[in-house]
Length: 380
Image 1 (cartoon, rainbow, N blue to C red):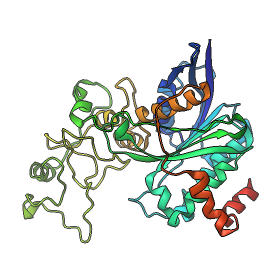
Image 2: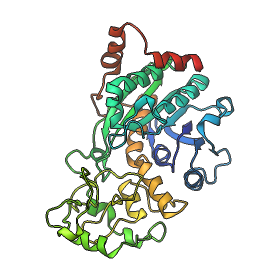
Image 3: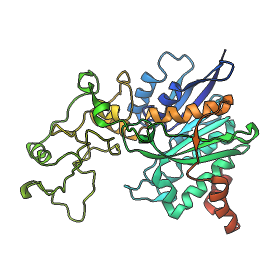
């Protein structure tokens, strides 16, 4: 026998979170298998939806990808689901963005996940965002989001943790907050799975071995001669402001010395964090060859298998890869969720935030719920 949990997803992107969830598989003490199966997903990006449909939903008669602005989704039309995933857009919480928090265009989008939870009462949910979420608006945004998720539907017991995905076998220093919630009536408390690669990171050289032989999504970027010459003067780990760069090749940018500009990888270390952008010297650059990585190489650093074919232009694919959750990291979290559901013990570590004590105590001390949270509740 097998226990298969039906999954719905908002802001699904290309499918990194979904792929990791579907790769997760555990067995309980009786040998019964526990797995997940996506049956519904939504995103507004047409190329990402095509990628998701071709790689995650292919050959699924009951699988649906809705390419539509989340504001136009009829929550009641979503099929019954056991679990909800949503990596809500992070632009307004990112440390490299404007950090507009709840006042930004993308800040309140998490509330659509709350709407789905309110309507469907799934057994569990997994929400993901950038590490900067915890400090946005001096921590106010994080408190609001956790409070709304805790009180969604019939109530959820939640655990919030900052995952350093390089400690779980992802060849990239990608740090993300993941919030896991179990419906209160299940009496399940999620524990953070212990790191598997804390002292044995997967390096760039290991991750990219043989990537040049993959046929699809592997077109190289054509660089200007000046860019190639500049890169030749930048050592592994260096960036556009390295002292070895001749004056004639230096960037004339006042007051800006971002570390990722023309930064080259180091073969014996995990990559730095990939982003969805690519202009202005942010493509991510090879440690040995004076060039940007191909999309397939970027996908390798995000732990997508070579069989995962992205749809769209080279620029669109670069964005899809950069915005994705690394499947290997998602798999670790989902395996822990399945073990909780199956009653299987696993090695764990303390969560970054004991949400019941550290977060909500602040709101109790203030003596009232946040106004934004109250307004959202009334609208829902």
